Figure 1 (spheres, rainbow, N blue to C red):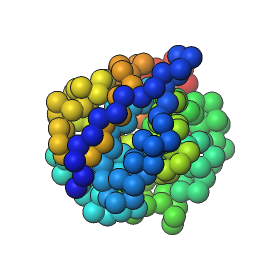
Figure 2: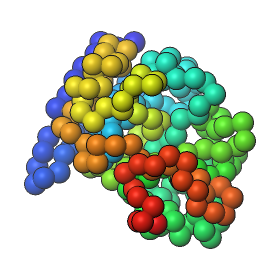
Figure 3: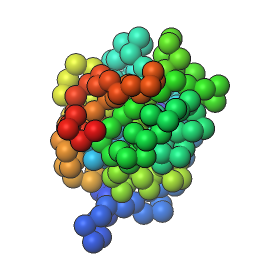
Length: 209
């Protein structure tokens, strides 16, 4: 475990970014099984290497989340989902229209998906964040876990300070980019059976589908 660090994201032209030094630190921490809180357009997320079993166990422990509730995975683009999941014509059209954006899609996992995140029904969730900092990280470190940076049962944090208040020194690095755009969690949509079923209402409204 690394000493807790908090980094303010740079803002240029209305967009946030990270220095190469901070990106390298995040890369090193994730590679070492550590945890990073990062901003998205919805709420602050908790990142770890989804292929590292110990790191994923640590995510569940820090969040105090039941192991029966799988967490999702963040990837840099809709195209990256093809590597880990099975898509049909319906899910392809949905992802092309709404990703990147404030939505999590549930799909059927293929053999390359990280077993630590796959449900007993062989399903897995995907996020393609549109926040510039999340996108910058995922271009270098992909995939990452995509779960809100809160204790189970408590409100998801929409500022870095809220995440720190809940998780404190249990996380190695916090990346602060101010308040999240939507200030609510992503809409979770199950596309695994050729239909569009909302599992959890959120930032993307049904009228947007």
